[in-house]
Image (tube, rainbow, N blue to C red; front, side):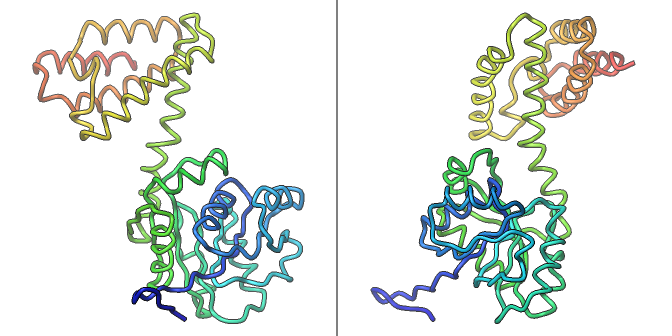
Length: 304
């Protein structure tokens, strides 16, 4: 029941059970605990991992593994923080056990919607998804990351209401999209995070061919990446773009292409050509048309 303090209505925070003892599940558990949510149970796939996670959380909670799931006692809110391919498996397991009441269940997949919980929705459960646009490589440092990002929320009215409250309590911000658009939304997230890391690794390969160690290459390139992110925080991509393609440096493009071909860096060459074409699309109006078309031709012909 709501309670009042200083004339304002305050909603009681739901108890929380987390299924998934990986980095995101643990970061969410610690973040929610720090804002007054009571974590009642943790479910994982392997007993040693669950025990290690419980120790890290330093909370009084029930720990279970998959084979003990018949003993599971759901909380008011169930957060399913498992890999995408396992969410349907968890939904089926939840459907098989007897749970009193109609809890809310949210999964943390970016690409998948609450439709995965259709069987539970049919039983009167409230279903949704809550996905942080954050890169969580460590659960401890991930707590702060969860407070400084946008969260994508989708689901039925009660599930989305609870999800939005969680995000507000963390001090973060949320937005919603339609269920059918989640795959495209998540692809955009992958382009911004995972693919940028992959591209960074290709750039490190290039510097290795210049005689630097990978550790030196990472140290040298990282401030450049950070300065680019800073530019994007102040301007749209068209105006944040700097460098060769922004200036229309035809002679430099020729040198780049020749060097990538000479070193046999086929993957780097392919990426350079593809991203270079898009960079020209961003800045094309600022470059003399004759030069623009010649750069386009050079990029096209270097792939043959």
